[in-house]
Amino acid sequence: RPIPWALVFAYPWYVGGQGYLAYQQFAKRVPRKRIWQMWGLFAVTNALVETPGVLTGFHVYYGNQPLNFWGFPLWAAAVQSIMPMVAGALIYVLRSEVGDSWRLLAVIPLVPMADGLVNAGLDLPVWTTMGRNMLLGANYVGAALTIGMAALAVWLLAVALGRTHVGDTHAHLNGPHSSQRV
Image (cartoon, rainbow, N blue to C red; front, side, top):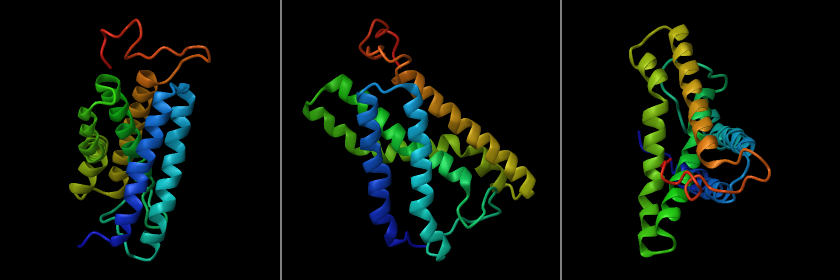
């Protein structure tokens, strides 16, 4: 099945544009709560971007999908919304290390790498249950584990890159704990 042309227009914004927005938030050292809110906002955006495609049959999620009420499985929004967040985090860490040097060009492969890292790591439970042709109930267990792993990933991003208190502005990467790499 060829990749729908709509993806050419949607995903550069969804993963690249939102990845840049995530990077800006991490660079500002926003409070941890804001990182959780970003996850929710990106999840809603993901559902909005993909819904027209799934409702028209232009984009299809195959298999016995759990949490699939209109053609878009909600577990996917929980995971796919982390793709731009991980891209932004990788860009933030890279820029913290190399500054504005030519080595910042390494950002280019980081965006698709973030996509692969997030999907391969977090989708594993639901992909395993669906790939083994298990009953829909087992797929719901897989989806619940996938969403739980997604929440764990957001928590890790918040702990590593978010502020705990309003006055806390030191970066973990450059602060007193800089020898403890994130």
